Image 1 (tube, rainbow, N blue to C red):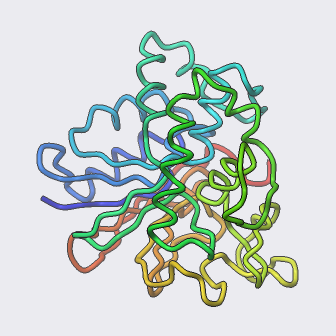
Image 2: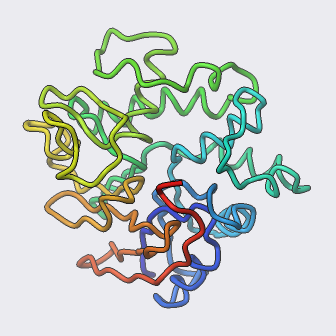
Length: 275
C-alpha cells in the first residue's frame, strides 16, 4: 500500500508507464499523487488523462497546462502554437475527461502523511488554513467554468501581491497564479511570473518562492512540480518533482508513505524549452 508522488507528466504517457513499472506500482492497492500538468506539449495527453482517471486511488492537483486545456476547450482562450491536445479535444470521451479534470483540486493536504501538494507553490503570505480556503474559492469557479467567464479573466500577471481585501476576478486570478505559475518572488513576497530560469540566473532582487524569509507555510512539507529548470529539489520542507521529462530529462517519483525515496526514468525529448 505504497504512496508515490510524480512530477509533471505533460502527455508523456510512455514515460509514466515506464516509471510506474519501475516502482512496481499496483493500482489495486497503491496510491498515486500527481503534481499537475498531466497534459500538453507531450504526444499522448489523451492516454494520460484516460489512465489517471481510471485509477481507483489517484490524486492530482491542477497545473497551468491543465487549466489552459480547459480554457481552450471552453472557447474562452485560443490554442497556442505548441499545444498538443487536439486529439484529446476530438475524442468521443472528451467531455467526460474534461469534466473530471475541472473537478480536480488546486491543493491537496494529507495530515496523516504530513505532505501538502500544489502544482507550483504557495505565496509566502499564506499559511495552510488560508491556502486551503483560497484554493476552495478558486476551485468553485474552475468546477463551474463551463458556465462562467473564468477563463476570459484568468490570464495575466497581476495582481502580484496577496491582499485579503482583493475581490472579484483579481482575487481568483492571483490564487490560481500563486498555486499554478509561481517560481520567484521579491523579498517582500511579490510574485514575478516572468523569469523561468534556474536559481542563480534570475534578475536581482528575486528569490525562489520557498526562500522568502518568514513565509507563513515554512512548517509544511510541500510537494510541487512546474519548475523544470529547477529540476529535482529535495530540501527541508520542499520537494520539487519536475525534472524536465518533456525536454528529454527524467520523470521522477518519490515514495512518501515512509522515508522519502526517489525513483526516475529517462524520457524522450518531445519539445525544447527554447522553442
